[in-house]
Amino acid sequence: MRDKNLPLLLKRVAEANPNVPAQAYRDDNKEIKMISYSEMQKIVMNVAAGLLEIGCKKEDKIGLIADNRKEWFHISMAILTIGAIDVPRGCDATENDISYILSFTDCETAVLENLNQVVKVLKNIDKMPSLRKIITIDALDKTALQKDFSKEMEGIEFYEYSYLLEKGSAKDGEEVIKVMHSIGENDIATIIFTSGTTGMPKGVILTHKNFLAQIPDLNGRIPMKPGELALSVLPVWHSFERECEYIIMSSAGAIFYSKPIGSVIL
Image (cartoon, rainbow, N blue to C red; front, side, top):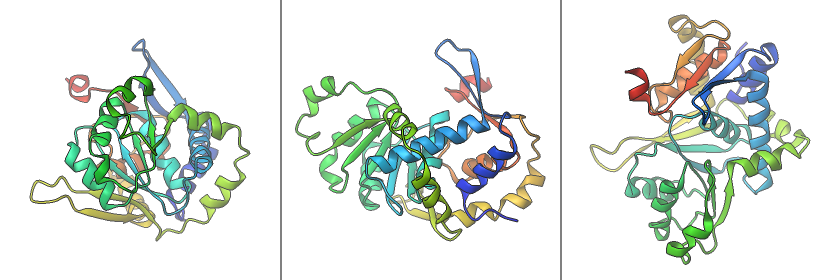
C-alpha cells in the first residue's frame, strides 16, 4: 500500500527502523556522525511544530535556499509535514533568481542557509513585498547585519533553525500529527524552478503523488538495504536528487551529506 504523502512515508519507515542510520555527516571536527531514523523523525516533527509556532500554515509557500546538508532534509520534510509547499534553490542562485522565485510564488517565509543568502534577499527586499519571515540554518549576527540593512530589516521577523527545534520540542506534537494526516497525495509538495538558461525561470508544480508514484519502480533500479550509505551528489533542490532521497528513505538507507561535494568525490 502506497503512503498518501511523503511525511507519512518517513513516519512508517522510522517506526519500522528506529535505530537504523538515516543520515551521515561530518561534524565541526570532521568526524563522521550518524542520525538514526527515530532521531531524524523527531527532528522533523520538532521543526514542523516550530514552523506552526511562528505562524506558518498549510498551503503556505516557503522558500528554501540551501545546499546539500542534513538540515536541508529536516526543513524540507518539516515544511511538507505541515502541508506547506517548499520553493527550493541552491546557494549558487543569483540575487535576481532568488528575488524572482520568492516574489513570483508570494513566499511569506524563506529559509536561508547562511549570511550570504540573507544579504542577497535584503538587497532586493523591495522586490519581495510578501516576505515577512526569514529563518536561517546557520546562526545569524543580526546586530552586525543591521549596520548595512537596518531599513531593509524593518518588518521582517528573524528566526534560526535551532530556535524552531527548541520551540517545537516544547510542543506535544498533536497539531503536527493532525495536519500531517490531512495531506492528500494530490496536494502540492514543491514548486521547483528551472535554471533560467533559456529565459526567466519557470516554476514546476509537483505533488506528493508525483514523487510517491515513482518509488515502487525505482526501488528496484536503485536497490538499497537498511543502513547502507549513499552519497548526496546532485544539488538537493533538483527533482531527481529529491526523488533519490525519497527512494533511499523508503528503503531505510542512509544519506551522507558532505560539502564541498566535488573535493569529496575526488
